Length: 349
Length: 82
Image (spheres, rainbow over the protein chains, first blue to last red):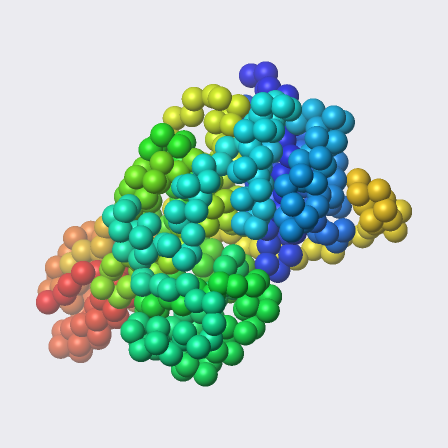
């Protein structure tokens, strides 16, 4: 079969101890049976390992941080497109998604660049601060949570939810506080790193299970693979995990993706209690860093996303292999100073 | 006595529970018990088979077997046992 040649820009090249999804997404695309993909890496920092993985990333460009505003991002993407003629763009960082969702229609209309993301309303509806309401709407249990802006609010929330309490950052980080003092400490630590608000969430005890999934935006879940972490780093990231056979979890995922009409990739994080109940802890609005496990299990979610972005009809995957493991490893790349110089000074590599 | 649905057991006695992601290794006797369970043998039949093979008292075998089943139950590999 002749593969269609396309150029896809991908961010999240930070394949570090708290890895971004970029490299796993690229691996999925490089293994596509439909597309022959030229990958354009989009980076925020000059030491993102993906910049130097030339067998996976064909060319890289630095892009401005989300805090620089949408205009500078659009300008930069227009420049990159003028050279690379992009077909699809896949943003992989939570913090950049807001800008990319807003720019999506402009990129399509003015530059012919496709993307496949939820609309802003759906994107905001699963935000940590309103997840409880999201759960009610989509018929999935969610622990109670409250958004706070000051540590003075912790005691009242603690009295209502009880301790331990989960203290979460707006985009990243979560810690379990056993006492109000610990919660105040975590409030300051997390807000110093990620800003306000902080989200306080009721603690639910059980085993964490996660699902990588993709929706077509019309109420269909195109694919879903559940995973349990087998090895967790001190940052709480999965360093090894195994795919599960869990029909109930797949059913809940189908319901959430279907009811919310989710468009694009996502990660659903659940706690399974000892009595077998599932609580949705978070819905991350992009593929997880372990999405390549789905590819290994027979569901190439990145390929499906690109196909849908290009307007192709994609049928839902019907099965996947359970009992497949992913085991990460770290790898030292040897990089010439000239390469580092190039990305540092010219913003291209 | 039946293992729960979808529990995978290799020839070497490596057990995988695809619902929880847990995996376990068993010793040769454990492998034998699992094999007999897969053959749909009852507890009494397993006790009898092992007592004959190892020339041991049925009461001793049964005590150990109940302990083993209790462990399988706690690991959610079986749903109940007598």
